Length: 117
Image 1 (cartoon, rainbow, N blue to C red):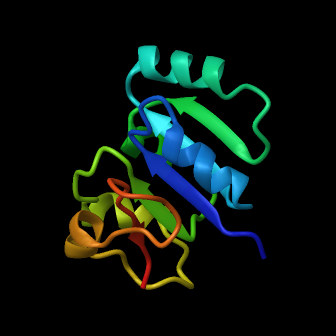
Image 2 (image 1 turned 45 degrees about the vertical axis):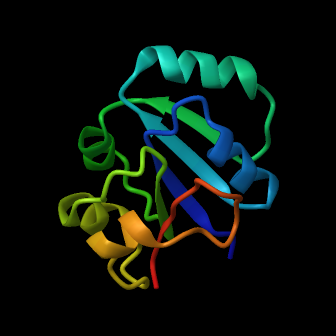
């Protein structure tokens, strides 16, 4: 099974692209139309990467997929309300503390992951 990550607030998409190039299926959701437009322009054709212009909770209300990981690229904590709807029932809940303090195993400095652990 391929890991499917939802990247919340990906900005221009650098972290989302990194994960996609490592084999992770990434859905990057940002409220900013400007950032999504730029990210799509920069990373057109990147396999396993989809950029979505939407507010996170609204997107999760409409999207029925389950994600194995949540990446809060904006480095803000992931609320339990979002993590409950986003993370697969087979995965443990993402905690507020892990979202804001755990460095990722996948990327270089400055990147934070809310990886279900």
